[in-house]
Length: 224
Image 1: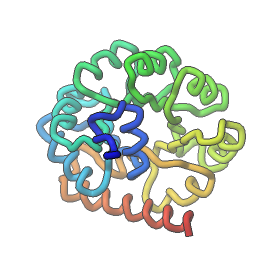
Image 2 (image 1 turned 135 degrees about the horizontal axis):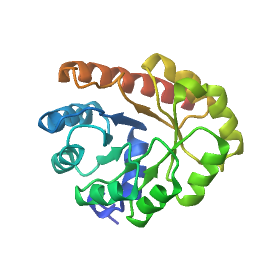
Image 3 (image 1 turned 60 degrees about the horizontal axis):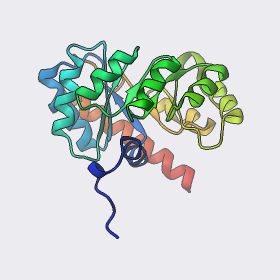
Image 4 (image 1 turned 90 degrees about the vertical axis):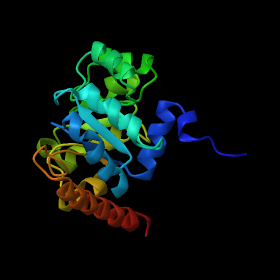
């Protein structure tokens, strides 16, 4: 039987496939629509398959629609800093496929689930983590990672259901990934160490290559 094409899969299945290909989420805070396709294409060519445009960026839904139309079907394009259910509805209208949140508001998580979109809420405590999973979260964003650190991640992994994907987000650099992976991180969200609005795309390309190389080395080490 021929495998289904990415476009034929549900958003959740497409997120799973994209995450399996490279579990690094590119967070493009401050991205402007006129630059959106070029920057997202640089990241896609480097290996990134999950692209997030935070909603506190200029005209974020315009950028999301443009990037979704431009990238191949194995990419997943969504919104970050989603704070309410109305933003989930607007994301669907723009063609977005992923909801990422800085918090664990269960009403927003349920709105994403009702829209058929995978949702990655931000959590910092076991209470938030379990409530988010009960509401239907696809994975959990450990945020802010620079305040919580690998010991907190390890403690959460010990009590959360097996298979729960935890993604540290906040001040992650290629050199700082290893302790989180050792503690059980499934992937990472990457912000200003990967992209800022003032970076040229050539610099974004270099930083993307550094992150992809660091992940490949860690992944090979965990399997070897």
